[in-house]
Image 1 (tube, helix red, strand yellow):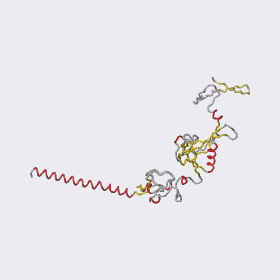
Image 2: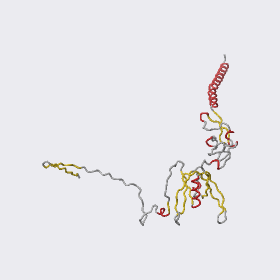
Image 3: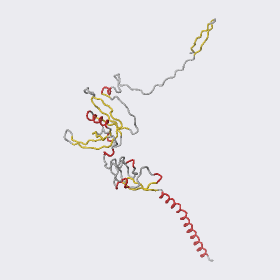
Image 4: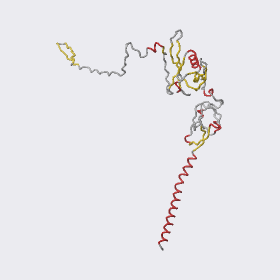
Length: 286
């Protein structure tokens, strides 16, 4: 056998070996992936998610929702497996885009009309008050926030003796909008209108505060559940704040002065015997 034939046989053998290795590799590598993909597909199911941001009071339409795949082991409680079950429902809590539509975020099925009336809790009322940017916490106030209501008002029977008092605490903000009103100069002006959710007693306090005085809204932390009672403050009390009897300003040192510990001096007791009498004398050691 000549040299050319041996080289040909070697090339054919190497090619066959490479082809067989490739086929074996494909068989061994594809089977686990196929099995894994099939297993994942079996663990998926379709549920309704928001197709866009859904605000409170909105009525869900067919264009607002779509189906998306979720693992069966991580399905949220109250999900919808059929789009038709979610269409027509009223949104109570804002739903973000791609977020699952849940029963807890929707009004009961017998509520078919959207808007502000749909999102008010039972035994509650919605009351709107006009505020400026300062009273409205300089534009930081948003629906869902909690506020305290302060009123500045004249004390009954006393002229020019205004006082400020917190009259409502932890009041939910339902919505914020603007409206145009005419000023004394006959020029239009945009004012902010804040709608608060109150019960009947709170609504009476709010109405009186708006009509008889000037209100201020104070933004409150969501986790602050403490109710703090105050006497309110008048002008005289306000001017006494941080006051001093000195003619010159006084710097208050808030650092605590360390307390020196006093070590008691040791004492020795000496007994003096005089006949049948025993006298005890205490001697201090310097």
